[in-house]
Image 1 (cartoon, helix red, strand yellow):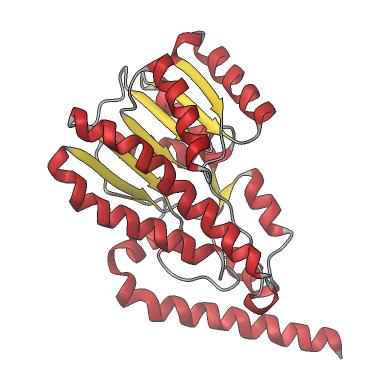
Image 2 (cartoon, rainbow, N blue to C red):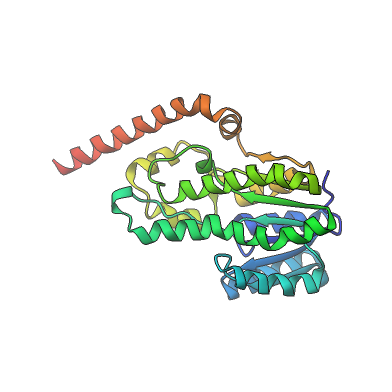
Length: 277
């Protein structure tokens, strides 16, 4: 099992949403927590909030960086390690979705989604893992998505990037196990975050209809489950029974999920036709 007591937990995307909630719960378990995010002001606010919550500024650190830029992240990592020591647990929660119809999305969106969600995961992992190998211990938790288990209508740019995160986690799991490093992956469903609100403004009608059937989780609940999964060395962390079943038997359940999505698409198309008449 992974003990968080006095462990250095580094969280990307830690200034809000799932990352910030994970930081809160990690601190409650006795960890030292460092945050990385792009928005300087939001990051400073998050750092202050965490320090106030525990009354101990020595257990919290933050440095701004763009995870899509390897050099930017490595510079921030060096400063955080100098403050809190080598990273024991890495949580890569930086990410975001840009929904839309495939034929309407510009090529730049596909590049940006892969840069943020996949390379924004890969860069921190590549920077942190060598020290873990050297010390022969560590824990890496990559945050994918339910859309990284089964393709979701309207997420042709986002879903493949989250599939790539899943593939990276599954590949490194075996490769890093001999070095006593745990590699796990989390698959949160729709979560009540600022990012989800922005997504809602861009979702095609069929995507919104599909999303309406999924219970939105609070960031706090997702962060709490992530921390519990880390402590128990869960290799796959899910947050509801349907996602758990997909993670275990995606190949068998895929036809059922796709048939359900197809029904939502047909309804949305019919409504669009009626509205145009």
